[in-house]
Length: 192
Image (tube, rainbow, N blue to C red; front, side, top):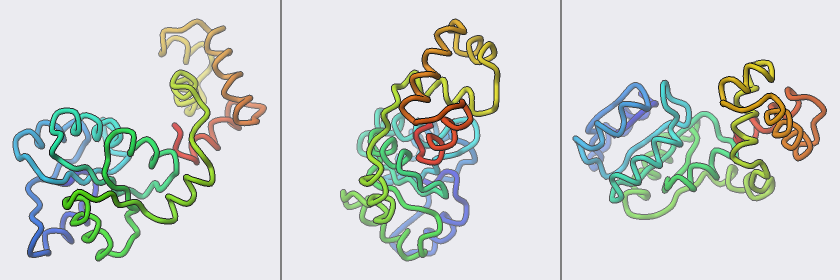
């Protein structure tokens, strides 16, 4: 089964030993289709409409533990890799990898192996894991669109003072002087 990367499905379907059993257009469709088709491997993108692939990966692994998840994304960010592995993904490759590498990754994940893009693995080890708490990440994510503290507080059901405290903590960890300066590196590393 494949979600979020149409060209990949076409390439995979050309292989004699791989059959694409379903394609979906958004993350919120994956689990229902996976329940119905029982794929051996689900190929997910990190960013999909209506529900991101990282959340979907965790859902698939929780409900269909025999199904393996391979993330294939344009967004090869270290934080995404870390979060994908924490969600139970068995592999993580970037979309611009050669087609034969993607096919090999699907076969290896199906065989029970873990497949990770080598350059992304190196970058992840170099940068380390996110020092942000879940709530700091949530607040920064809510600030990404330039929303005011009051608007973020309303959306997250927090007081404005609490939002400011989380922002201050996150900004300190990221050595930033403004919200925008904090959002940028956290987003670039895939922590948001």
